[in-house]
Image (cartoon, rainbow, N blue to C red):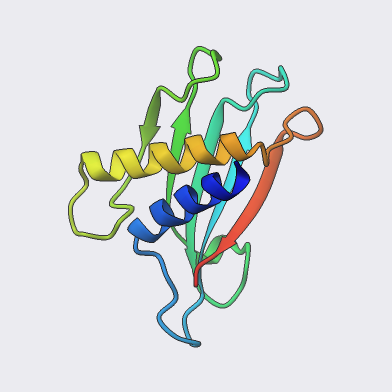
Length: 126
């Protein structure tokens, strides 16, 4: 099951076209969840794209997207997105890519909002 999720996540990540193009480039996506309702379940998933020499530096963040569960029913109903796949157009494709990455992130159960409000996972680009 985890292998299937990982393959799906990797294939969708490749579609956002955020890969390192040689040793001189450092691109990565930081993905994490937040629990604003404070009930132990994530209601927001954020995807931050970074480029630069330092990991987890706010200076390296070039864009962000987020998916939200407004009614706290366990489904991400809405998202804010930019041109996440870098094709020059902000469209439904970008919306679906953000939605799919956020939903798969939650299926991995990498988040632990009951232990802390924010769980950070760095996904280095290759």
